[in-house]
Every structure is written in C-alpha cells, then in structure tokens.
Image (tube, rainbow, N blue to C red; front, side):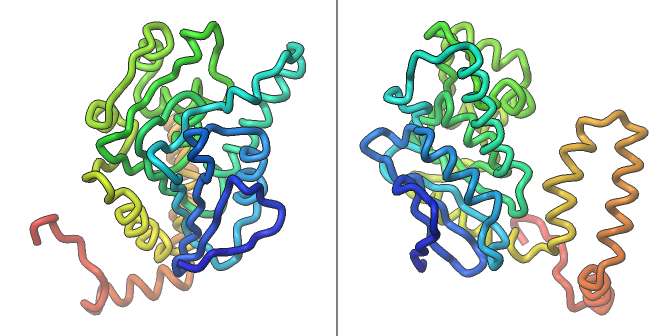
Length: 266
C-alpha cells in the first residue's frame, strides 16, 4: 500500500492507496479509536470529496478495537441547541459515507459500540472478526443515540433488537451480531483486512453507474412505497443498461467471454 498525504485530515485518520481502493485507518488506538469532533469532521471532508482514482474504500482501525464510540473527553456541558447541532454534525459526516460516491467496507474487531456502531452502520458492507462485540450503552448512561443509530441500526436488525440493546444494555458478540445482521461477513481472527480488501477490489471493478444506483437508488427504493419503488427501479435499469460499459459487458457475456455466476464450490 502507498501512504497518502491528503490535506485537511486530522492525525487520527491515516489514508493509503491500494490500487483503486482507498484505505482509511482510524489511528487512535490509545483511545480504543474513540471519536472526537476532529475525526468526525475529517470523515466528512474525506468522503465528501474522495480522490478521483478511488472506486471503493476500506475503513480499518489500528489496535484491537474498531471504535469505542464518542471520546469521553469530548463530553461537555452543552445547551439543548448546542447538543442538537452536535448531533446533526455527526449525521452530516456519516451521511457522506453512506450516500457518497464510493462503497465503503468496514473491518470490525473488538469494541464496536455507541458511536462506533453508528460509524459501522453507515458503511455499506461490514466484515467482522471473532473479537468484535456490539453495544449501544447510551441507554445505560441516561442518554439517547445521536449519530444516526436510531435510523440505521433498526434497518439492520429491527427496532425490537435495538430497543433491547438500549434498555437492557445487551451486548452482541461477533457470531450473534453476524446472525442478526450487524455484519455481512464473519472471518477468522486477523483476516478482516484481507477480506475487506478483496471485497473492495471487486466493488472497484463495478460500473460507476451501477455503483451509483446501488448506493443512491437502492436505499430510496427500499424506503419508498412499492409503486414508486418499481418506477425508480425502471429508471435506474434504463440508465444503467444504456451505458456503453453495460453494453460491452453484455456483448462479452453473450459471446461467452464474460464472467459467469458459479456456486461457491465450483
């Protein structure tokens, strides 16, 4: 990998290039990669305008933990209005990840709690190692989530499971989290980054039009009523199918030169 020196990023974010994949690494291991405002704003700037060559990204972290949530040093006596604007800042930053130009694969190990789970749920694919554990401890501290968990986590596991996490402090281990939908892949210890890079490299080879449709149209279709969803799907299918790249790939497939779907054992 080639380290990059991108301007206006905090020291807590290290970035590297791996082919067409942008690798972003949380580098606050001494804080279990807890998020301060500078780091959250760094995510916003980076994913609002990723390097032009980047076709996908991997979000990794130094040390034994993905992210232990909000850095407690950031806790301050805020007025109600100040708290509102602070929460909206997190929303804005994580939306840049979720609704950005490139798909993002997160590597989860150790603590994925509070704001760390909010960050992970803003990514498109999550790869967990056996050490990963998931929790929303805000409820036990007399707080409510403020970084997007109330919207994104129920989409992954359902309102009923998030209610349980908030009111009882339930912690899901890696296997349980994978089973209920907090991660899409569960890999052996130490193999999370390798798997994430493999997935991101595959994503980087997808047509930009298809990528845009999956990142931007698909979530909206999922939230729309069926009639509107079908209509949006038709529009995106026409746009994607009409691209020069799609026509070339289809000709290759029909000529027997394109990739074919095979079973895992093939």
